[in-house]
Image (cartoon, rainbow, N blue to C red; front, side, top):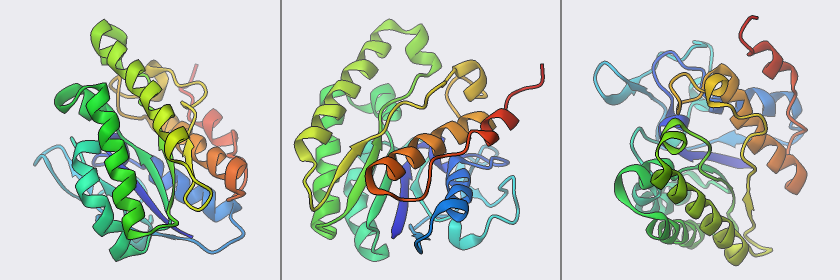
Length: 236
C-alpha cells in the first residue's frame, strides 16, 4: 500500500505542528499488519515567517523524512490539486489517496458546483494515472467562517452534498471511493487553534476519521485509539 496525503493548510501543517499526517503514521505503525509506504512530492511544513512551504520544524523531530511525504499546500484546494494529481500518482505509484480539500476553494476561488466539478476532474486524472487507485475524501469540516457567515456556511453544506453525490456516482469496484465522516466530536473551540487549523486534538480527530474509514471499508489497520484524544484534551 502506497498512501498519499492530499490537502490544504490543515494537511500540510505549520511550523511546530505534529500534523494529522504524523498521527496517521503513528496509527499505521501500531495497527497495520501489512507493509505500507507514505509517498508524495513534498515534505515541508508551511513557514508563517516567510509564507512559503520551507519549514522542516515538525513538533517531533524524529518524524522520519520518508514518512513526511505529502501533496498538500497552504491555500491550495481541489482547483489546484486536480491538475497535479495525475503526475503525482504516476511518479510516486500511489494507490491510496487520503484527501481533505474544499474549504479554500469555497472561500476564495469557486462555488460549490464548480468545486464539485473539480473533484470529478481530480478523480479522473488520478484514475488515468492509476486505474485501480482508491481514495477517502473528507467533507468540508466545521470552521469559524462557516459558523459566522451564513452564506459561506450554506456553500459548505451544499458542497458536502455534491461531494457525497460525486462519491456515489464515481465509486466503482476496481477503484473505490469512500466519503469519510466529519470527525466525531469536532468542536472548533477544542479541535482547532484558530477556528480552522487543527490543534493536537483536532489532528487526532482527523487521523481517526481517515483511519476508521480505511479500517471499516478496506480492513486497513485497526480502529483508531481514543486514548490519544483524551490526552489531547485541555486541562480542566
